[in-house]
Each structure stands twice: as structure tokens, then as C-alpha cells.
Length: 344
Image (cartoon, rainbow, N blue to C red; front, side, top):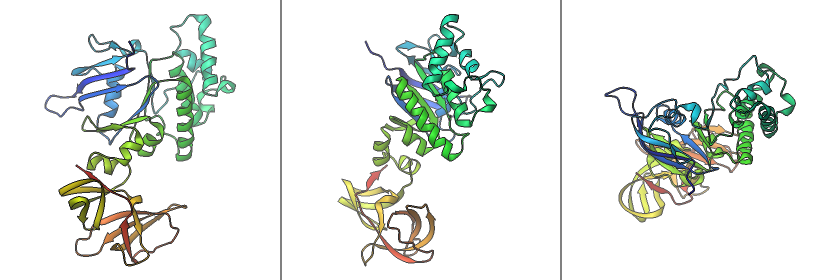
């Protein structure tokens, strides 16, 4: 029988009586070879979930199964779970060289196997030529790969990464994330990444779990969750979205932006999610009148904050790729160019 690598069953954890649970009846499965991301704002429970999986915390209720084995009844300590950990501070030993850091995680192996396994793993992460260097002689991205090699060398069933790229600058973070993802793919490793960075979650994951209040608000492939958010929270947190109140009549909703086409028919009062890229400036009389409030120029494109005309006009975000530069205070018109989603 093939088991999921990880199976969380109604997992709950609170840190003090009378306080709301940090993790609240969370159920989740992770399949072999899958890269899954726990995404959410601070305090949503993602890091506590990781610590419960690792065995660094004990749940109040529920169960953690790794490879079909129950880790919570009785409690199995972290060092016996077959789980690898990579943290944002890397936790490398400064007095050990690269090879020594990787060997440290292999103390359980027979002596003759340790060196070959360590060097095999260093080759996987592309650091063989740096094996004699100390951590302070490496770049941040190279230190991250050493930490990854140390976690991978024991060949864990599951790798847990807690904000591993947050200490890197923007360009190095992007490159290192790509490298780590490729290494995990090559090794066939099942991994869970914890992050609050939306771009990171979208780029890294096979599936993402958007958490809120200790629960999974929505789970699915990144493109699916982005394109089809179930709730206003998902629409607003993952990417940016314009949320418009209106009245739906079949395939159209009447809103302050005018008639908005809907991806699915609805009736009555609705909340509609319109992504900034679903809005476009018009060159003629069509669309809703707006005033340009601010512009963020980003090279190939620009984002505009606009306000709908009229008293109490709502502010909207428009993503524009036309190359036409608009100035603050300018009057313009915008319209919806693709069907919007009704969210809860």
C-alpha cells in the first residue's frame, strides 16, 4: 500500500488555555515528491504547523503520520522522525568546513559510508569544490545550499524549510530559490516550504496551502488558487485584487465600475474580485470614469491607483502594459476585460 509522505489529521495546537488555537483542526496530505507551500500572514499558524510535523511541538489533538507511521501516539521525537530541517538562519557550524557540516548530519551511518554520502550530496547541490571552505568564506546562497545538503544527506522522508530565503537579497533570493527547487526535483524529495512571500509561494509550489487563523483557507495548485480564489481573503492576500460590491443578474453584476461580466452566473448581492490585470484603460467613451492617484513604474509595465468618479468613489488598482504614461490627477476611463469571480 502506498501512503502519502505526510498525513495531518485534525491537528490542533494552542499555547495557553483561553486563547484561540494557533492550529485549528488542520487536515492535509502531501504526496511523495510533492513540493507544498504553507503561505499566510504572521500568526496564521504556518510555522507552528511545521514544528508539529517536525516533532518540535506536541499537538493538543489530532495526528501526524509520516510515511504511514503515527508520530503522535506515542510522541516520536524530532530526531527519530526521518525529517530534514532547513531554517532561515542556516544554523551552520562556523568552526566546521563545508564537508564537516554535511558529515555532522551523518553520525548515525557507519564510518565508511559517511564520506561518500557527504560528497555525493555536495555534488548534488554543486558545492564539491567548496568542501574545504568555512561558512564565512561562502556567499549567502552557497551557505543556503550547504544547509540544504546537510538536511538532504541523511535522505529524510520529508524536508521542512522554514523561511529559508528570507535573509537573502532580492536577486540572490530568486536565483537560490530556483536552484533549491531544481535540487529537490532532481533528488525526488518531498518538501514543505513555509513563507509569507506570495511570489515565492507561486514560483516554488506544486500546491500551496493558504492559511488563516490556523486553518487552510484554500488548497490547490498556485495557478488555480490565484485564478479562482474561494474567498475575499484569498483574493486579497494572494496577489492583489479589487473587491467590488454589486448586484448580480445572471452573467453580469452591476457595480460602481459599471456592468462587470461574471465567470459563473449569480443572482443577488455579491462581492466580486477583479484582478488589476483584468482592468484596462480605454481610449474612448467606454468604461467608468476615474482619476489617476498614483503610478508605480516597473520597466515593462506600470501599476496605477485610480479612484472612481463620484462621491465616495472606490480606489482601484490597474495593471497597465500599454507603455502609455499617465500622470497623477489625469482623468481616464477603465473597463473590465475578462470575466470576474464572485467570492465569499
